[in-house]
Amino acid sequence: MPAIYLTDFVDFVARSGQPKLTKVQELFTRPDYHPATDFYKPLRDGLREHHRQCGTRAEVPGLLPALTADAKKQASYALRLAGYSRFWGRRTLSWFEPPTACWQHATLDVKVSPHLGLRINDQPHLIQVWFKDERLKPTQVQLILSVLETELAPLMPAGTIFGLLQLSTGKLHVAGPRRPDLDLLLAGEADSFLRIWDGLERRAA
Image 1 (cartoon, helix red, strand yellow):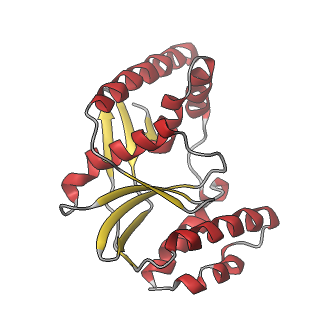
Image 2: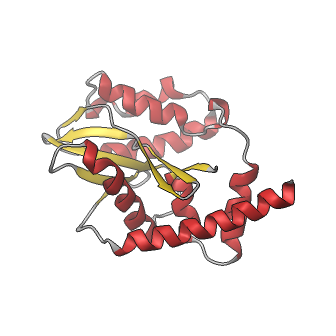
């Protein structure tokens, strides 16, 4: 039974043709997770801990030295810390632990784990963070927000806002009216993913 992350599944959905096969092959052969190979883990953990400790917006740029001594990471992290400061702006933020869930279709498990649980001006937000450089496509935004809302709304108070933060720019995308037709798209794409995955398993047997 394949178990993948939400961002991986949405990346698969957003592709067409040969790149879909390439994405599944990449996931099929990917080694087990290890923190040492997770480029953004120190940044992700640092932002979460900063909120747990009731840190301020003014302190965000100063997080960099404690996050990493790697020059490549520092350049990337500095850009994203600046983006996070822009997102924070004049908002009042307070932390809560975000819940997790799993979107399932047949034998496919998609892990739904928002990075941030924030009360923004006292309104609860569950936020997935997009750490990559490439700009988000509208389809990616819609699908990520749809899955977040579908799986996590039952676990949250009414009025919770579901968001996707492009960290490099500080832009927060929020869910609009829910589109049930996206459920059909996700189910069809999950079937396609599983057909390719099953073919790779047969070939590897």
